[in-house]
Image 1 (cartoon, rainbow, N blue to C red):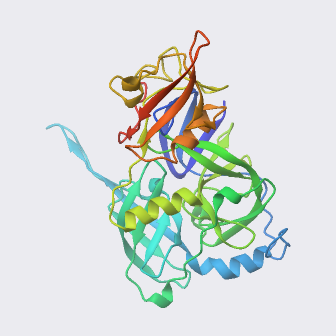
Image 2: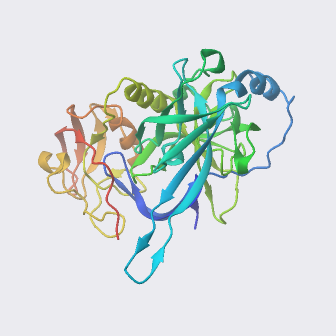
Image 3: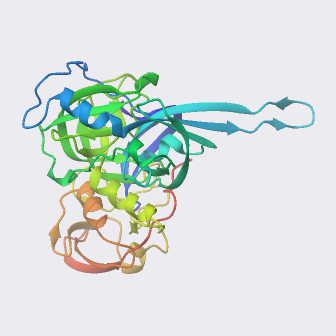
Length: 372
């Protein structure tokens, strides 16, 4: 059975299905480990020519000053029952981040700093400073840190339009795998439009798949395109053995930027919510069963979908006239709207009747329900 692995070295447990941005569950069990690994053999060829862009060496020289090493320290309190006591435990995880602007804002993955009591940012020139977690969004696995350093220390890397990524495009990853900052690997875009599971169990649509080698410690570091711009933040790998297999995923830059700008502006990040559980394969069909993949049932009671009259077995074919052919496609389209927006869904009922249903999108709960 394949497994998705996130960059931090902490097993987060089994996820029964992927509950999408609207609380749409995909069937199948995937083990999530808070780390990344990725597997193809990374060739440390600093002067290999990258098609339609700069060499790996040129990208490294241009962007590496804008990539930081991040160490996040967490303290688990001890306990006592009157007879026995356990001491508190301190753990330290490592990831990477991208300098976002000259104000001192740095982007990384939310799971890199989740629960941390102390976050340190280490720059290429050896400067180490404590960072403040400005805000996080578990639904997109994005966190914004802020450091107070001289502007000359900050080397922002521009973000690309992740929607423009195409299969075969060259990419370069820079990060801190296994505690080795500034490690640089290269590969290609293996696929676009993938869906991966967020730390709070919802689905992140539009992820970029790559064969560039990424490992524990790469999480939150940039996946760069052939021009040296950030296509996304390295986030997960998929593996059947627990080791690298050359199938890595980065969150899409467009979503990263939208979330980061919202956090930096001091606003709350909110996501649209329908409250239905979709089948994992085939068209965007509302499940007819509950079980592990749909712990709250096919349609969450009191949700926008329930209030609008959606029923188990309904197949959604369009959103505001835009065709959707799969559950992932539905997630991706709905993610482009805001809570409070009203959308018109074209639906085929279980009796093969065609109808339209208007749904006023709600605000996604903090975490998706899981079985057990």
